[in-house]
Image (cartoon, rainbow, N blue to C red; front, side, top):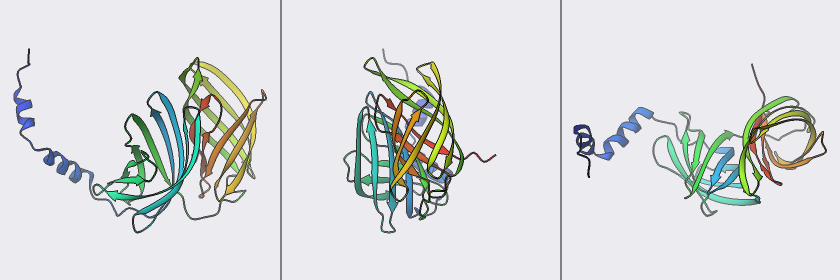
Length: 253
């Protein structure tokens, strides 16, 4: 039996959708034009029933063109892909980035200053969030990350043919691209504490690999992008039955 329409429903249906869009635009306020330059993009979510993690280093040009490299892990599959594309404004503070990799497009919100800050994938059957960080045009030097860094991340572990959630908090100290640290982990509710050490190897400016080994002798491999402002780095696990992607940064308190 069809439910009767309420007065509120009738009134709401009489208001054009364009009204709500215009109200949302006015409430959000105007943003500056999209800022050109280079951005580090850290993405995490699900593609169907498989976890997804991604790192990108993407450059925006004044003519609206973009170019970059994506480091992508979906389930156990890993790939590295250079790409090109364009951004197009959808509103004062929102835009769409269309890339020449099929399905790897983004809906992005800008800050008042026109800087991309948060994004979402618009691919079907994919729920993926993006965090955008400005990457100044500087060289990443070996001593830039010296000091203590920390992170909090969530990922997935493949167990009994299904991906189960995990979470890790870590603290590490860098000295000249070498690090020692402590990781406290929860694998589907089972706790673990491990000390580790490792090294970053730079392949091109700010982009490279991290290899680590914990105190049980287990080794880990990551793609990594250093922040050129010296505030931390992002990594993506590239092998094994664990998939983690995270931002590791300085704690300034």
